[in-house]
Length: 171
Image (cartoon, rainbow, N blue to C red):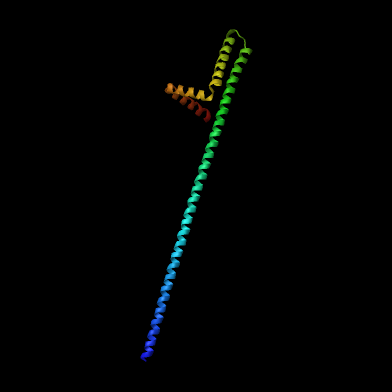
């Protein structure tokens, strides 16, 4: 019996060693699989981060390009409007000078009507020449200088015009 017990003990010991080896091997394989999975997750996360950075960078560049294009179109439109306003002011000035000539030719040259017509024609001619030569930017500069030299009367004129406009639009 001692022999059978010895053999049973050896069999149990061998089985325990085999189980211990199997558990150790399974643990090692599980650990390797976990590390491999963790590495794949890290790689995937890094790839996702890199892709997000690329998309953000591309989006920022596209937004910058769109803003630049919008700015250029706005600048071009403003320049075109400025050129059109300058051309219109030149046409208005020429028209005023032409009207002054028509008044001089159409009304009598003597008497009170002649003097009044001559004064009106002279004023139209001077105003037309000023508008034609100075243009919109020159007129704006002159108006700005006048307001700086006379701030109180300018404010009073602005208040009076605002009052008249409010009254006219209220009716």
